Amino acid sequence: MEGDKAAVRRVDGPGESLDVVIVGAGFAGLYMLHRVRALGLSVRVYEAGSDVGGTWYWNRYPGARCDVESMQYSYSFDEALQQDWRWSERFAGQPEILAYANHVADRFDLRRDIAFDTRIEAAHWDEAASSWRLSLPAGRRAAARFLVLATGCLSAAKMPEIPGLGSFAGPVYHTGTWPRDPVDFAGKRVAVIGTGSSGIQAIPVLAEEASHLTVYQRTPNYSLPAGNGPMTAEYEAGWKRDYVERRRLARTTKSGTIYEFGTRSALAVDAEERSREYAARWAKGGANFMHAFNDLALSQEANDTAAEFVRERIAGLVEDPRKAAILSPRDYPIGTKRICLDTRYFETFNRDDVDLVDLRADPIEAITPRGVRTRSGERAFDALVLATGFDAMTGALLAIDLTGRDGERLADKWAAGPRNHLGLMPAGFPNLFTITGPGSPSVLSNVIVSIEQHVEWIAGCLGYLKDHGYAVIASERDAEDAWVAHVNEVAHRTLYPRAASWYMGANVPGKPRVFMPYIGGVGAYREHCATVAAKGYEGFTLEHGIGRYGNPTP
Ligand code: N01
Image 1 (spheres, rainbow, N blue to C red):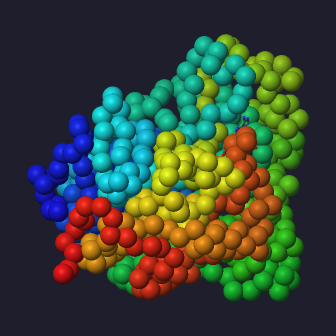
Image 2 (cartoon, rainbow, N blue to C red; image 1 turned 30 degrees about the vertical axis):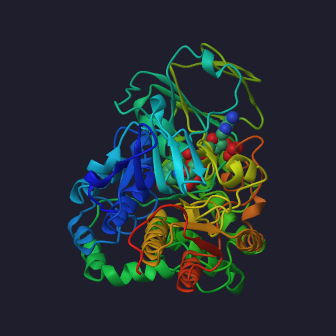
C-alpha cells in the first residue's frame, strides 16, 4: 500500500478505506500522522474541531496557559523545528501554543490528510475483514485496518449537575469549549464556578475585565506562583545549545520534565532548612516546588510540611482572614489533585469587586434565569463561566461507540474502570491504539514527552507488523490483567488515591473510583514498552489477519 492518497481504496460502499485512521488533530494526532506517512501507509486524521490544536484549540478561556515550561512543552522529534521555533514567555499562553501547533501542521504539510469538523461517532471491529468500520457524521463511513485514538485526556468537557443550568438567561461558557470569537466581559457581572487549574488561571483575568466577579468554590486548591515572564535570550540559548541531550534526559525522568530534583526526605532536614528550600522554590515559581524533597508524594508527614508552607503563603497573600481560610486546602495532600500554577490568583481576592462563595458552607441549589441561587440566597449575573473540568482520560474514548471482538463494548469492558494493556491497547480491541490512554503516564507527565513516546512506539509496531507480514495485533488478557494490577499497585504506594480527584474519576458522579494514569514514571515506562517491543511484542498476539497489510517479506 502506498502512502500516496491516490492509492486509498474505496470499498464496502461509500467511504474510504485506509491503513490507518487517527482520531484527533492535537499534538498526538499531528505527530502520529507525520510518522504514519513516513511508513508509506495510507492515513486520514478525523478531527471534530475546525482546525488543529486539540486542547489548545478548545481551551481559549482568558488566561489559558501551559504550566510546563515552553522550552520543555514542545516537540523534540525534529532538531530544526526545536531550534527554529521561538517562545516569547517562560510559560506560553494558549494563543502562542495554538500558533505553534499550526506552524507544525504547515511545516510538515499535515493538513492535506486531516478531515476537520468530523467527529467519529462509532467504531466497530470487523473480524471478517480484520479492520475497523467507522461511522462519521451524516451517515458517512470509512474503514481502517488500524485505529489510533489521539483524542486527548482532558477533552470531554464536564458540565456540572446543577438544576436549572439551561434556564439561565445570559450566556454560559465552559472553559473547555470556549468560543473562537473573543468574549467581552467589560461592564458585566460574571460568576465563575470551579477553582481547578482552568478557574485559577481565568479568575485573575476575568476580574480585570468584568465589572464584578463572584467565584463559587467547592474545593480549595493548592496553587503555586507560576513566576511567568518573558523568555530571556540567555535561557533560550542555554536550552538550545544542548537541546538533544536535555530532551534525552527529560525522557528518563519521572514526569518527562527536567526539574531540580531534591534527593532528601523533607523529614531529614530541620524546619528552618525546609522552609528555606520551599521559599527559594516558591520565589522562582513553577512546579519545581513539588520536587523540593523526594518524598512529598509518598509520606503524609513530609507532604504536610509542604502543604502547611502553602497555607501560610495563602494567609499572607489574602488580606481577609475569612477568605484566606476558605481558600486554604486542608483535607487532601498537596499534589494529589493536580497542582495549579497561577499569576496573582490569591491576590485577586483582595479586590473589592471580587466575591468568594464557599459552597461547602453555602451550596448551590439552582441556576435560575437571573443567576445562581445558593442556600443563603440568589445573586444576579450577566454571564456564567463554568470551569468545571473534564470527564478525564476515559470521557473522549467512551464518547465513541466502540465495539471490539465478539461485539464487546468498550463501555462494558470499562464499567468498573479502564483496563488498557500498557495504556496502549485494550484487550479484545485489536489494532486499536490509545495515545496517552488510561494506564499510561499521560496526565502525570509532560504530555508532549509522553505523546512522542507513544507515537514512536505505535509507529515502530506498525512498521514491524508490515515488515513481518502481520495484519493484526491484539493485547493478551493475562498481560493486560498484570499491567492493570501493576498500575493499581504503584498508585497505592503513593498518597494520590487519598484525594477525590479527576485522576480517580471522582469528579464525575457514578464514574468508578480507579486511579487511571500510570504513576511508575515516564522513564521506567518507556523502558518497559521498549522491552516489550524488543521481545517481539510480548503480551500481544500477532496475527496474519484477512487481506494484505504492507509488504510482507517472502
Ligand atoms: O478542571 P478541574 P480544570 N459545583 O476538574 C469544580 C489540566 N489543565 O479544567 O474539586 C461546584 O481540575 C471542582 O470542584 P471539586 C490540568 O491537568 C492544565 O480546572 O470537584 N463546583 C473544581 O474546583 C487540570 O488539572 C492547565 O470540588 C464544581 C473545578 O470545578 C485539568 O486540566 C490549565 C462542580 C474543576 O476543576 C482540569 O482542570 C487548565 C459543581 N457541580 C487545565 N463541578 C495548565 O496547563 C465541578 N466543580 C495550566
